[in-house]
Length: 225
Image (cartoon, rainbow, N blue to C red):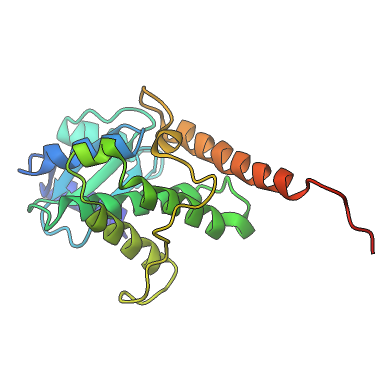
């Protein structure tokens, strides 16, 4: 439905390359949080928080979204990047919008089918918890990220995904867990990654963390009943 709305907006002239007053700050935060190149567009009457879509999805069979944006808007949409759609008005809170976008991106990562179905929720929670903690890193604070607002945006998107009430308790803990991936581990590269590369990197990160705890749990004598 969102893709259909986007395509309709492009053809009606309602979608443009982001030129909003707060766009530069928003873009800086996204670059620090997500190692995948993102092309940001604003659309009139876009409701709610920003969303992210892979450039390779095909709204029209055989024609990917990135090609449509490049053709219709003369936009530079790199291969393997994310297309971010936001409202044309300034955000009520940029940090909250960044948190919501990270939540949307993580849901999209999980939906790509690389993780076993039975593990998807736990993997999503692990990654969400890592970003929840990363909000207080010096790098992000220097960019003007407000941890509480970022966490509120992240929590709102993932709570909705899990069908929890809006006013329920946060789905993440304020306490850092043992072996919690750092922001550096999450982003993991000084150069931009494609969405496929980052998805595989996150898969390796989560699997490596799980293997570490399994090995630690297996240390010692085996009980025989």
